[in-house]
Each structure stands twice: as C-alpha cells, then as structure tokens.
Amino acid sequence: MLLLFVLFVVVYQWCFFKEEAIVDISLSEFKEAVEQEKVKSPITTQGRDITGQYKNGTKFKSFNEADSPLNDFLRKHNVLQIVKKEEGPSVLSSLLYSFLPIIILIVVFIFFIKRAQGQAGQAMSFGKAKTYEPQNKDKITFADVAGIDEAKEELQEIVDFLRHPKKLSRLGGKVPKGVLLMGAPGTGKTLLARAVAGEADARFYSIAGSEFVEMFVGVGASRVRDLFKTARQNIPCVLFIDEIDAVGRHRGAGYGGGNDEREQTLNQILSEMDGFAHDDAIIIIAATNRPDVLDPALLRPGRFDRQVVVAMPDIKGREAILKVHARGKIISKDVDFSKIARGTAGSSGADLENLCNEAALVAAKRDKKAIQQDDFEYAREKILMGKEKPMVISEEERRVIAVHESGHALLHLKCTRTNKLHKVSIIPRGIGALGVTLSLPEEDRFLMSRSQAREEVFVYLGGRAAEDVILGEITSGASNDLERATEFIKNMVGKWGMDEIIGLASFSSSGASPFLGKSLALHEGMSQGMQYKIEKRIKELLDQYYEKVKEIISDSKDKLNTLIDTLLERETLNAEEVIAILEG
Ligand code: ADP
Ligand code: ZN
Image (cartoon, rainbow, N blue to C red; front, side):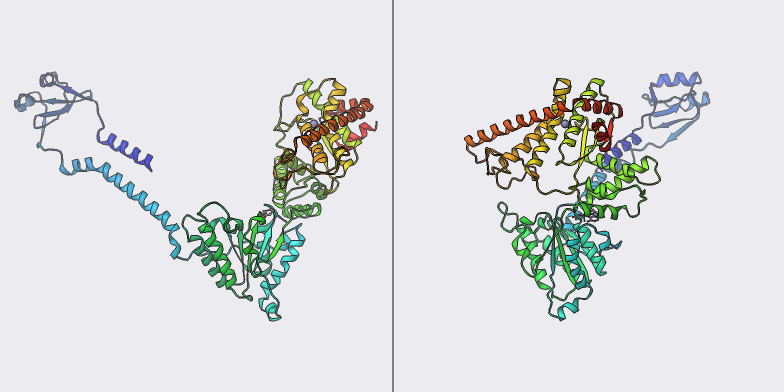
C-alpha cells in the first residue's frame, strides 16, 4: 500500500508539473522573432505574460516589462492576439493541489486502521459463536486404513455405538465418550478418526489443539463451547481434536504465569465432556504423539478413558498400506509389494503414501504405461538417500570406491546373520554418499544377538579393510563406517552387557534413548576409571575385529578383485550377481 501511495504521489507531481520545453525570451527577442515571421499566429497574452509558439514548434514565453501595447505591432506582422483575462490561480485547484496528498494520506491511514480493527475484531469475537462445518466431503472408511488392525478393532466398538447409541445404553453398557489415539506422526490417526465417522455415517468435526491457543485469554474456552454446541446439534458426530497436547499438557507445568489460557481451555474441554449424557451419539477423538505430557485429568474415566495406540506399521502392515495407496494407480504385474515393504522398515503410513506418489512420478517421467518395480525402488532410494545425481569422479577415485563397496558386499555375504545384501552401487547419490551397499532385512527385527552385533561391525569395517588389503592405502571414505562401527561396539560393551571383560552392566544414561537423537553418553555419572576401562575395551575390540575382517578379505582376494572389476564396469550389481561372482 505504501509503495502504491508513493507511486501515486510521484505520478501526481509529474502530471501537474509536466515541464515542457519552453524558452524564456525577452520582449525584444520576441519582437525580433515576430518581425522575422518566425512566430506562429495566434499568441496569447495574459496581463503582461506572453505565450506562443515558434513556427518550428518550440514554445516560448515572454514578459512585457514595459507594458507597452503590442496590438498595432502584431497586427502589422499578421499575428493574431488572444487576450486572456488576468486571474490568479483558481481557488479550487490550488486548494486541491496543496491538500490532495494529505487527503490521500488520511484515506490510506483510515484504511489501515480499519484493517487492523478487522483483525482484532476476529480475535475479539468471543461473544459470537463460531460455526463449524462438518468435514466429511469424501467418505473414508476402514477399508482406506490398512496395517493398524488392532486400532481398527478397538474403534469398531465406537462405530457400533455411534450407529445405535440407544441399544448399548439400554443394556446398561457404558460407552466411552473420548478416545485418545497415541502414535507417531503420519501413522494415520487423523485417517482413523475420519474412518470412524465414515463407517458410522456420522458428521466429522476437526480442530487442532493449537487453534484453541489464541492471543486473548478466554477465546480458547469459548471456541470449545462453540464446538461442543455445534456437535450437540448435529448428532451423530465425531469430534476430532488433533495435537491435544497443545492444550492438554500437565496443568501447572511450565514457567511462571501465562498458562491461564491453556488451563482454561483444558478445563472447558473437561467440563464439556462431563456435561453430555452417555447416550448422546457424540464421540471425541483426540490425537497426540506425546501421551507422556498429557494432564492426568484428561485420562480419567468418563473422559479420554479409551486409549488406542496407533503403532508404526510392521512388514505386513506396510504391504497392506502400499496396496491401499496403489489403488487407483496403474501398477504393473511385476511389482512385488512384499519386497518393497521389506525395504521400508521404519516408514509410517504417510511415508509410504509419499513413496507411492513418488514412484508414480518416476514412472511418468520415464514415459511408462504402468508403474514397475524399479520405479518403486528408485523412488525409495531417492527418498532414502537423496537423488541420484551425476558427479564427475576420476578413474582413480572410482576404483577406490569400487574396492570399498566390494569390501562391504563381500563381508555382507560372509556374515549370514546380518541383513541380506540387496545391491552394490558406485553411482554417487547426493550428500556425501559416493557409493552404497544396500541391504534388506528378512523380517522386522527387535532383538540383536551378540554374534549378529559382531557381524554388523564386520560389515561396517569391510570397506576400510578392503582398501587396506587391496590398495595398500587407506582413505577418508570410511569415516562414517568407523563412526557407526564404534557406536555399535559402544552399545555392545556399555549398554547391552555383551562383553566378557566389562561384563554385565549398562552405562547408558537414563532416558537418553539413542533413537531420540541423543547418543549413548558414556561419561554421564560414570567414574573416570570405568570410563577409561570401557573406552580401552572398545578400542581393543575394534582393532581385534578389524584384523579379523582383513583376514577374511585376504582369503578371498582373487574373487574380490573380480568383483571390483565387474563393479567398475557395470556400476550397479544386485545380490544374485554378486553371489555369482564370488562363487566363481
Ligand atoms: P497422523 O494424523 O497420525 O499424523 P494422518 O492420518 O494425517 O497421520 O496420515 C497422513 C496420511 O498418510 C493419510 O492421509 C494417509 O493417506 C496416509 N496413511 C497413514 N497411515 C495410513 C494407514 N494405516 N493406511 C493407509 N494410509 C495411511
Ligand atoms: Zn563404507
């Protein structure tokens, strides 16, 4: 707006002060020009001012200082004279001219004030009831939710209740008013809530906990009131509160004041939930990924007393979810969903949906008629480790990379307890990964045995050991491997109690789960003597394992060389090809 305003002022000034090329001449010059017949007829006089135009188009202006009459002189030279009445600048125009900018400024100012008021008004509208619209445009049912069957089963009861609320209460059955869905982001909590509404033909209202937290104290509570009012007038319905931890945190926690708003909102939710009868066909479903921070009052009977864990999908679940999202896409017959599911451990439903869309994009880019297995694999790798991108790498470095990756691959095949080798590649993929040796687990694993852990370390060390044995030179390419190998041994010795010398003891600091981004901190609360012992042991083991790996590699040097050469030539080898080479 300000820019527009400035622009306007500039244009305005320019219009009114448009300077034309006007030459100022003296009276004698003017007379001379008339005598030489250079002046166009007619000229204009206004008081003593004379304005006119030369025959070549240039305008001029002069001033009759002597106030001598020019009539006879002009008539003699055949120049007509228009006499304009002498007048000051018009009152209106001068007024307008001097005040217009100020008027515009005031208008702009008023505009801004109005807008600001509008915004504040929105926040201040707690007297007015906000209306909520049901949000079930496209109907979602349990068929759209896959892989979380336990959660679905538990919610089936809720669906039955919403369909026939009187039936249950007549028999004296008690139906929960609230269900708390707990699970990591993207596991399908929102989807489940929608599906419950869809299955029961109920209306679906959704709001995020953070929407309750507003600038003004009291707004949140009034929103809750409006929401429940809307719900009561539209039964049967499902009321979904996402991220309930935004309002439902432990009351009294936090610093100083400023929690009033949240507490009021929470209290309002609780009292509204207490307020409606057991046979009202309303179900409140709340979702959170932080059940640990919730106020215990929320979990009391009669409130969110039904808690359903929405787990990350397992291998079967992932396959089912992939199939759900494959519906409506053209999938080639060669696609093996169970294999894709095997390679996507740790992915949530939302991740898998993303994978399906990515695969469709890849297939479209490659001008295919249907999405094929390799599209899925490409998409997975792309999501997993950044896009395959061309990078210029010297022959010498390519060889080092091939040696390194071959080392990993060889160890993978020798160590049968680790994940199955999937493929080896020396095509660089984005951030830092020059080559890659991919493996797939046979099934989801939840336990790690000692021999398995040891073999895991062997595989990590395989790259560096191959460089050492084959090239007689080591490179920095193994830094990430070393880091992970060390981390593994650290866990074996200091956390899992797997080492004979240190024995049964766990030194991981409490609560610091490595899966939450905090790595095992050995030094916390540990004596220096013990810390020294553990670190010494870790180093010993690492060296011991490295020697063992070097031995394995030296034993298969010839086969490894063949593998390296083939890899240099083909760039990517799958597991079957690697096995064929290593078996001669
Ligand atoms: P949350 O609410 O738990 O963060 P959402 O319900 O918003 O997760 O899930 C995001 C999307 O991921 C959904 O719209 C759905 O397409 C997909 N999705 C997640 N879980 C599943 C599942 N179990 N089955 C099918 N699709 C799923
Ligand atoms: Zn490596």
